[in-house]
Image 1 (cartoon, rainbow, N blue to C red):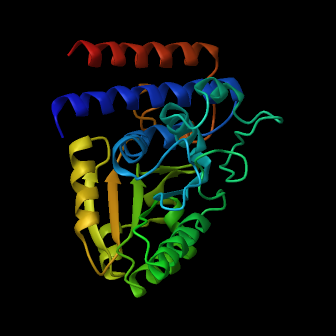
Image 2: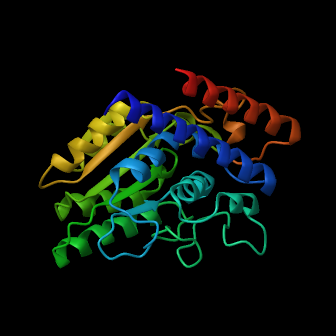
Image 3: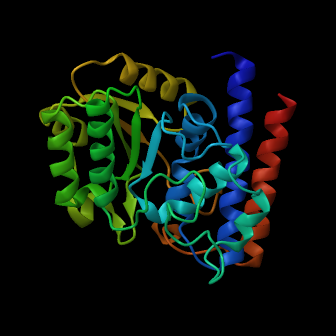
Length: 281
């Protein structure tokens, strides 16, 4: 990618982070930590990688994205809004009783959401079904799903991985957000999923390990996924929970709580400063 393309992606990612903070602050609840850690991947998928059209959210030939770690809906919603699926202003209605933007993605109410998720492990299971269906229909549809490293403690995830490899789903990409933290603390202490790369390779995946905040590495990994034939691809991305907001970074306490007024102001000031610096360089 060119330097200007990368700069635009970085600016967009910063705006996605602002939307995450805006929505969770107004809701007084939500999950900012894991939304912020996956921001670069959200941004790259929706602004560069996937075959999608915000004016035709249900287009049959579109690529599919399933947010298996559905609690990080603020990250997905912010991305969808910036991509033009619905007004950015609506992010402020997150989790309100009369809002279509509920705490977990709902495919029946939110334009651009391909699967309702929330129960961990079920998103990846539906995603492999979508990939198999596309294969049977002879469609060129690609299916991407984002999982948390805490989520893959669920046995259902590994059944889905086994399924993807068994049916040679080379149109399926599992993305693991390995930020190292879940609601109860360090994933290695709660129930270690490691070694993630070795396990996925043993399950028949082509595996690429990357820095999930580096757009060049994201681009290369997704190119590898497109080029890989006869087996599914897994991208294991090392990330920082709460990335972009200093007091949220690497802090498990920000898994599922919203900033108060002072924290909101600090977070937005930091992100605005980051945006201004990116613009200037």
